[in-house]
Length: 420
Image (cartoon, rainbow, N blue to C red; front, side, top):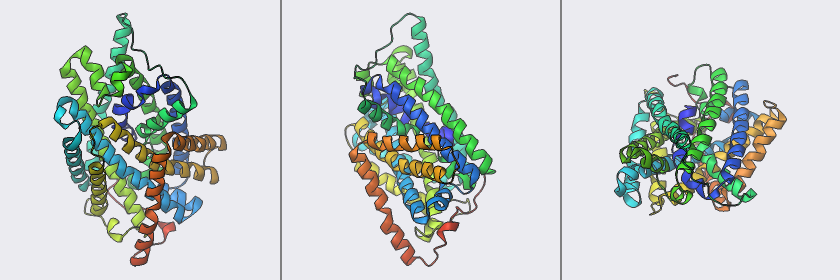
């Protein structure tokens, strides 16, 4: 779940979004990896100390209102993330079928993808898990392939493409790191799924750390490999940079294969995001902060209302973001999703510090990194994230006012479900 959620659409579009930043990319990667690992450590330490996932951690540390705002904002990040990865799947398929690479056809592909994955998740966590494992095994292939092509190019004596000549600056580093953050979101998936995981206080910490470190190593080498194979100008305008990087060497058939795998990778991430969004919505509903219908489960142990709500919001976001520029649309939606997820990361790092679950130095690094990423994401994306977070407060007020089934927030947990 951790590897499959982190390796989604973000890495396959990342070379395009960070190409203009040149050698700032390398420093930004170092910052992102260090910061992400510190955030993951904070969450892993909390998982070892407290069962029940992030809702429980934050409630114990800061109370139920802070837990609601944080988890609502995280829910928004899942919904926007579903839209982003669905758009990315369409963009990757646009390499093979140019007609679906932008505009209305891209939106149609994204919407169909969201509906199909929602139907898969309706049958339960086990079905979603099977799709996740299969997609994860497939999606690693292109990441390793571009690294192999760089090694072959070096072995033949050919020069590598230079990175963009952008000067190294603090602004460039933070901006590139903020774009990378979306590609790294997902390390928290094990913690969020704690309530449907056997032996979660042991499994969740190890999965979180091992998965994050493994993906970080792949990301660094694969992103640089693409930029060493493609001119930065070409990479920056590409909807499928991994496919464009492999096609000149292996032919258009290989490029098409990589593009299809990139689409499968995006769909695999979308599958995990839909599952996670349903679990988060169900936890919030169990606390009485969403209508009770969001907490009701079917025979497979999933909440149909939570799944459908997430799909509807994601579809509306896709429709609202129709544009002729794939990279611009993806970048904006991804930044909003990343900013929304940052709220969870920052609050969990603060909770780990307050509850003394993490060493002060590591928790402090995680907190500073999260704040820096807010700055790097820019004012517009940050304001969008804050506005979406504030939008949850009237939802909570209405749910508590009109729901006689509200339970005690301090006892909020996700109900029992088929355990994997």
